[in-house]
Length: 207
Length: 177
Length: 234
Image 1 (cartoon, rainbow over the protein chains, first blue to last red):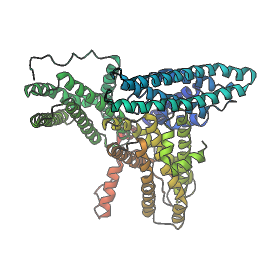
Image 2: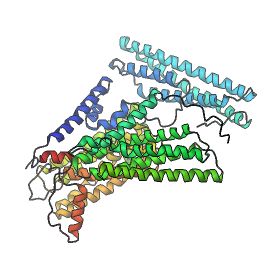
Image 3: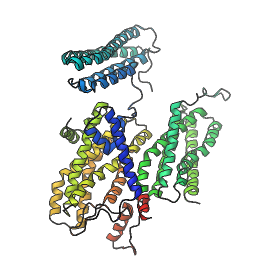
């Protein structure tokens, strides 16, 4: 049995070493972000396919976020950093937080749609009703986001006193409020249809 | 159309994001050229090849396009045309950068690099032309028969000229002709 | 999600798996499971292929087969995003990466599932050339469902970028196979882990095609090619 009729050349060796070194560096970066186990092993082998974990991604659509998109993201990024701590392992937070964040973004996107409809729509009665519904939904988003920020502090209770139940309860309440928020902001949509029928709003979907 | 009316509002200077996009695109063209020369006696000589062939052809024919566009009385502003060409440059440059690992693989492991490089130059250059043409069509709202005919004729002529000039530059740069 | 969950989702409903990988928190988990699936399944296929010769070729082929699947993905993935953007189709890089990994994993799993059939055929001491053709046919057959997953990279599934990506992957896959040869080794031949970097897949196919119609080049010699081959030759 022979390894190869010739030993590997220097450029081949350098190419392999470069690939492996970049993989090690990428895995180290992921390890600092709290990733573990299989993900780090995968990073060593297929790090080019895992680059979207770290670097900016191409947006799937032109910015569809609303006025609260950045605040929502900031609150959840900060919360995730805390929840990734081993001291917060007692809480099964992942699925609920993912769902909560998605719900808030959907509600925020609907607010953005309504803002576009109201822009230049004049003072018609339908515009007034739409504006009131929009403000109610915006207040709810603001309130939920503030409670998400408070949730970070509550996790301290888990770390110090092992009190998991209050945090679980708060998380469940937030999820329930977000679900209700979907219904409130969905309520604004019929008003938007009325506004379009009255002809006092530009097309909802602008380029 | 009032020929003495000012053109569209002056484009604002390039912002940092746009400069970054242009820099990345330029890096893409240079990288594609660099990897094509791997294994040859003078690898550095191929670095500017992609820039010369693809970007050079566009740059040489752009002034003619702009002049003829105004002469034909077509409605879009020169700034809109420049913007379409800028978008084409960025997208083609990104494609060149994305294809660099592909060409590197063949350059390192086979004798197919030269042929593939020529093929990729054609693909990248062709895609730049298509993106630019689509952008220019989008910048025109004139849907009259004469307006559409003039625009199509201009774009076809420009594309054909760019391809011929690109071939000529390619032959002299890569073929030593 | 466990590895089995991911494999099940990959075979039954790959679209849903790729959609869920768009979430930043799920992407890492799904990507690592898909990578594990590729390594395991392609390794099994490689081991089966190695049984044609037996001995240490079983191990070497098991180690090389995952590379055959992963190298085309790693080389072509950077070009896929720009191809979609050229077609004016916005696509997220997470989704692209997930679709690429899912495509490779699905091919590997299906090919490994066909492993027993291949082993059975190899066990009756098939002709060497026929064995290679069988392996190629298996990879093409299982590659098609894999390619079908690649089109899930974008919800709109545009044809142009998918065809271009598939063409690039096909080229890289064939050249990778040539580079990593031999996978199938004659039962009486000495085992070699890798051959020198010489020739390329297109010239090899051309020569084989000519030989098959009775045209034999006066002098057929594999020359060192590419930067790696020539540096070895100096």
